[in-house]
Length: 360
Image (tube, rainbow, N blue to C red; front, side, top):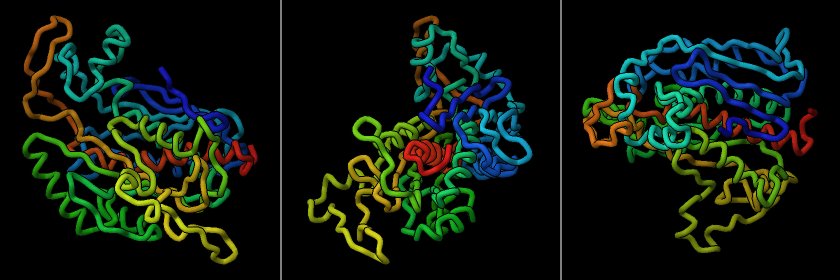
């Protein structure tokens, strides 16, 4: 398995959904970075279940434990190991339906790739639960990036076709955290909540779009041609289970635009070179331009739904009906918002170290 990401700031993920614990090892973090357990816990709490009608009833405490690399509130320069323990685990439905392939999940591909030896309980390594580790690593990365004033935020911009109105980046953090869907547009959030409740009552699920923004990113991050900044960000964001699309700036809309519409004119403001528009999303030629990095992530509907589905028993090689029971999210978008922030932070931290902007 490919469980590590990054070159200088390296994050290794471990654990499974229904295993004893899950977490990350962060190697390459500079010594002397102030990090309190509360800093990490705050981020992990943002992705916990049970905060809205959209989420599963599985209520893990997700209490962060620092196992190494942080002493007296500061990083030591040694690998930082962080973990949370799985306590609210019920694998009975997974044992009962061991060989029934759940549509939309990685059951079939994982079974074939690993010869049936993969941990199938709760999706194992393919569960969205492993992103708790991503968020822990992202909390460390955010603390490192604060040394160069890089700020990262994300918010829900669409659920089930309901789109949020535009909100200034400076107001997104404050506004988005005012509702469980992490949508900065209160009116849209209310409509989204109604839709999720309806879909949930029908035993179904719904997906959406998350926008991630990185502010104060210095010019020059990225290593063309095979380690471009947008390429590495996309790779990191695609590692989030359920992400099916990533676009930067104007994204797929560039296919409908003329060059005169898509080009971002250069100008000087306060002695600094900027672009007056940001269709490029803050990245040109795979290198950060100094403008805000704007990325949108498409999240599919949670594949575990209560409606009857048709599948195959992979052991008996026969078609069979399946009704997925257990505790699942009607919409995973809100819980994925802090995960998007975390993966952006991890990549930007790694590239900032590689550029020599932060002392390693």
